[in-house]
Length: 387
Image: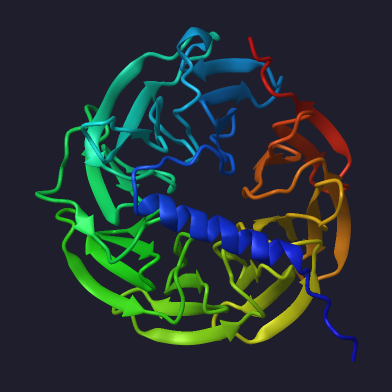
């Protein structure tokens, strides 16, 4: 049996990131770096990356809009939560700004913009300031006319998506930071937290219906199918939980932390750990189907499209930072293609038409697209020029 090779530098780097985020959650210092937040509605690509949020036409790669306008960019204000798009609204949170000498707290805002097409600065529909006092990492979730926002100061807040007013009598409060987007079905919200628990809430009131605890902290969102809520955690496992009562039905192992959420498709569950191991298990009982490897740690969700699972990773450590995007056959785990990227990948890929797209922080590209079937490079979007 061949010994599994474990990268030495990257897990230590992840631990430092994790510790740094915890430290910033305990004080008023605001971190200035993170990884990009990427989302798509099939027509545009939405990127939260540092001091601006941008939208690009997915077909032409032209800039559709930027917020804030170039003259209003504040380098100390950062955006990293993936924007939520629905009904011509784009909603996202910021990483917070120091409150000043007289205020030890971080001031955090949630923004709702009108989704425009003409390259103009999008009109601000509303902002909400007093809903959080620590960074927003989790992508907001819009359900009808309500948006649910998880915060690093342990709360899930329900806001009217049309005006930003709070909907619940009071926010739900977990035992630690909420980094993953909530999931919903029917009358329930499912919320994970670094408090090592999955919480089921009444979607109308925010009241907790049940809670299930796990060995490790949960940094990613829950994933739903008809019967189960799937959870990944830093206890090096994934779990299938009964959607109705929170009972753990089965657990499947990894070899190290599972930071990103699993991906569910066609009766199988796919997940990866920070040692670069990729796993496929039966979604009904957790039995192993196959195991593979990628270059470097995986810190995000796999993506499954038509029989192929795409895994973004940090790539091998070395003198020149690089990332990797790897495609596997979902039936047997055989590698179909791999593309190296000019910077490590920390953000889940998205797809539009025949392209799989990744966000990265590089001098040469902030978005890169590859052919879904072959991995051939299709296009890059370079960082905006600094004025």
